[in-house]
Image (cartoon, rainbow, N blue to C red):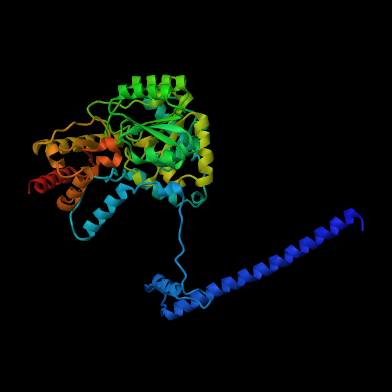
Length: 471
């Protein structure tokens, strides 16, 4: 037999063998499905299943799973789930713990005032809800969407940037929709940072700023943001002295949690440093519209040359009271936007189309709603600060955001730390606050108080805090 014919015969035999194995494998899989169906039928029979009735099927399934089969060893150990090191290195998420305790107290009947989470309690404008209800009835909007978001929404984001900041953006290449700013920020960091890369993060830090870098495998340098001029000097110093040099600088003004704000010259100098030292900039502008006392938030992208070095994250969560809708935007440098789109193509298909359609209506027609909500938060800020001053606390009134960064009077920290003090207020005063230590070492001695409750509830919270501390 010549060599070519031998190879041909050999290939045919291999193909036949693979088909035989495949038929055997398919038979096993079919039997497996039959076993599952028989088990489900048996389970329903044993639980006296009645259509429409509530049945504790999960408990029956757990009991069946706990039964030891004939071929299982008597000394079998529970299977261990060994998660990745990146998960093991994450600390417990404090806000999840606070929420768990809050829900437990409310289930027990306690009237808990929540100043902990920066989650709006006000409903969106009825117009947005009506547009959502209308859009969701369209049978064509329920398929997978584009990772970058629908074009009309991106066009309206571009129009808003031009109207409020004088910034011209290309909706095709310089804007994409995200599932809130936190999603956009964390995935952008994943697209830009890897093992060995150094990123500058603001301190006190919003946890997502710090741990998104760690999850991407990068290293962080946390710099104090409470003095913006000093922050710029420290960025320059880090670029001169650190090896490797910072690859990315994350800035967040108005700042969460301290409510620190900056003026436009800050971004002029930041862009100059970025071009001089070769680092990229990620600006988190989540609280841009919640401004008080005449302050106006500048956009990083309004500075000439900014679009060459970075992007900016915005969101509809705070300004439009649409936090649960998860609609945000990444705007700026086209290469960074493209990198984010590439990452998100592998993770999701973008936001639900009816939500995006309703967001278009909000951007086009609800400027007055955004302005009115800023006034609402300003009044709440004043109510909370006035009440705290009446009980003797020194208060610094923020110019923006939905937070009061409150220093704890020293006499209350003589026997406990910041976290323990916050837990005392939750346990004894039924008031949820965020301990400053949750935002890093520079937060020790402070509380972050979110002005998301109604005015009377804010007064009630301070009365309950006073009774707790004086009792």
